[in-house]
Image 1 (cartoon, rainbow, N blue to C red):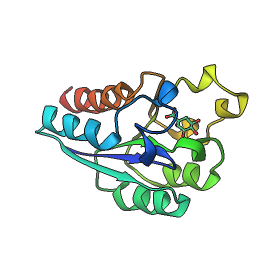
Image 2 (cartoon, rainbow, N blue to C red):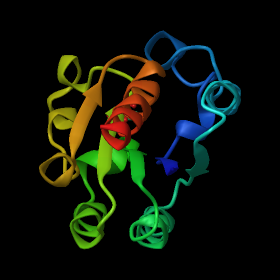
Image 3 (tube, helix red, strand yellow):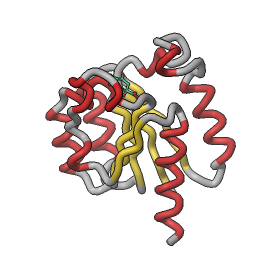
Length: 142
Ligand code: DQA
């Protein structure tokens, strides 16, 4: 089973960035633990601050992978292009957010990802990614 986690802008700063909202762990530390725990899953990770690079990665993996776990970060709320990319591919996408965006500013309540996502997991910290992964694993074994 091939799953990719795709992270958008500023998520490379996890651990340093607004730790009160996003926590103290770097994504790399968390990802290593995830790979260790789910060693039988082919788990990949990609991060970019550039919208077009995120779209390229969605297109590249969107016909061969079993699942995409996408935190498009700020582009969630602005990017028609990422929304269209998700419509264009076949691989199911789970939208995740570390923070509960619905408890935050109203501009974070809008998502161009949600209408075309398989599901949405919001507000569980880094555990949001693991819950998304478990959903793909469970679905695959049904
Ligand atoms: C985020 C929420 C977004 O509103 C924000 O722009 C981010 C991170 C989250 O994971 O909570 O960069 O996607």
